[in-house]
Image: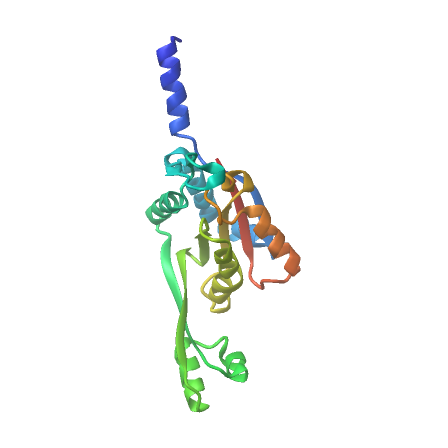
Length: 221
């Protein structure tokens, strides 16, 4: 192989570098549920991760002092790549609407009711119902997926609010959270969460918290 062809081949390999799953954590048998009951969806999730072209997402020139001028992975481009591939496989956005109030007693009483029943119950008790909702970006056949390259706080909201709300509302059976490994996160701008840190946060809460089956996936390029 001459030098020109070798360089072309090298560039092509770099251009098509795909993502890969490095770590998986199954909370309350979330992974086992997927493998047994939703095997096709589990294969789709793995396929999407593999099809994300990592190097095409390396577009952000760092302005941070410690990495100034370095080419980093763009969280925005990463999210966009996942969104495109998941939408192509019919993973669609979904919302769970509900009504809240200042009364703890009423909240506990109406927690598992439909939105319409919640509103009626709150109003009949003489309280003011306040409309709210949770939105999940990708839901298909009772499985929810969140791809998180945002800020640290967003992951806690996904795990302890979004997935739980959809599960309590009987809209999903399991929630999936896709996160960069620390090795990938270190090549991104500051503030992006990473698998090892969020895995620690979940384990620290104990085996039954949050009370929803989850699959945490750590990826790297």
